[in-house]
Length: 324
Image (cartoon, rainbow, N blue to C red; front, side):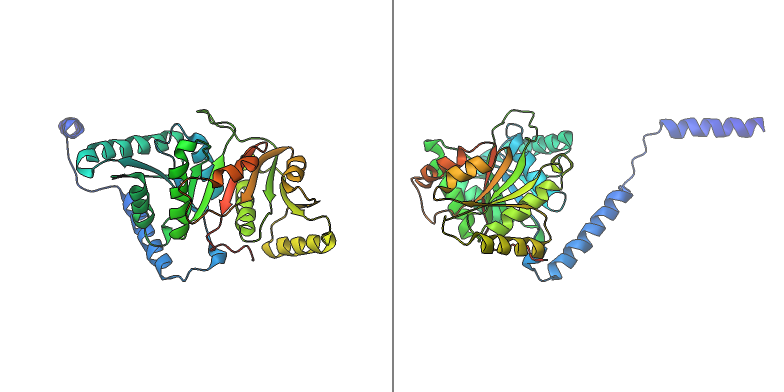
């Protein structure tokens, strides 16, 4: 028994110290890849219907770590039902910037892992920002998981208005929805604001997407206690009873519980300002201009962007339906 025991012990020590290199790969990784492949192929065969819309958000976060408020809203609005990509465009020639692109993607991937974000990195190099964004919108994603929504931060800086308008115009031409976020707190540690989730129902085109986004936001644990409210401003002479009935029927069809606040007024902005408080976030519909190189549309939105709490402008490209 003793020689046998000694031989086994020596063999164990040798195996323990040996540097054995195997090419087997991780079983869990292989199974995950196979499941993802089957799901993507199945999704590719399905015919898209607006009722099945899920947010696939391309967030123009730049280096990401200095725009945590944008990333937080993108992840919250996906509510574990969509896809979030954090995008950075590096300007220059690919031949000169390839090493920088690789390093930027590595840093972003590390940031996503450390912050435990349900997101994917997307870093591209192009000679100018507009061309880089075009490349992202055309090529990022696969099959049915390509981005359907662009999320970016609000800027009242006149020097950036040209680029801002360029992004909106490009998104509209490429049939992508747009979310423009103006957040009161933009520090490194972002915390969800307190108050109601308000939807200013200022048009029927963007209304359904705003309602769906408000509903998705409320699904997050930290937002469940926030009431969901629809603020509907109408002229003083409008049939308030009929408007209220239409809104209730719409909510019943969507199966989304929300409070309806009808605001008879000739000054909608002032009425909304009074009715929205306390407000955590306000969704407002808007329509990007086809061409606005001077960024004059920004001036018209300053009143809305100065409202209390966070504000999210919403443009629906037309692929959302809230009817159950």
